[in-house]
Image (cartoon, rainbow, N blue to C red; front, side):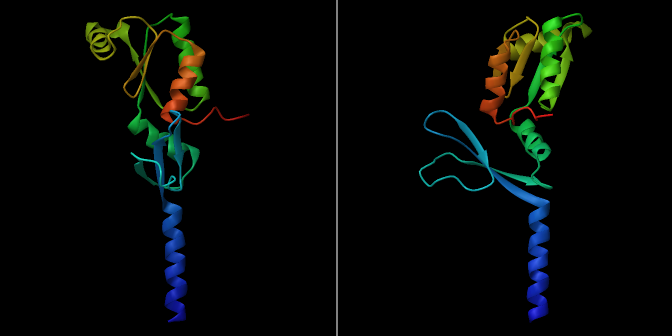
Length: 152
């Protein structure tokens, strides 16, 4: 019996290392919180995410990218577009980049999804940011739960 208990403990620890649960909720002040422990009982509308693999910053970013995908609509020779792309890379935010000069379909898709034909346009989930204002993009990513830029 003791041997079985020891193996059960090892299996439980191994399972914990290969999967995690993240909880997401919006507090009364509008702040979006993500953590690996359940929220206080006073919080309503909690979204529970099950993340496979270790709960590393990369795993959190991957989980968030499925909930709040980031898309950058850009054009060649657009300095603000390059700035947005560089910022997203520095923050290690997974994003899809769509060059609207590749054909009329890309431009029409952008206009249909965002209501804009201005570049850069960034979508974070359902939210749309037209142009590049660093603080607005930073705040939008934080509201969606993306981690702060890593140091170093």
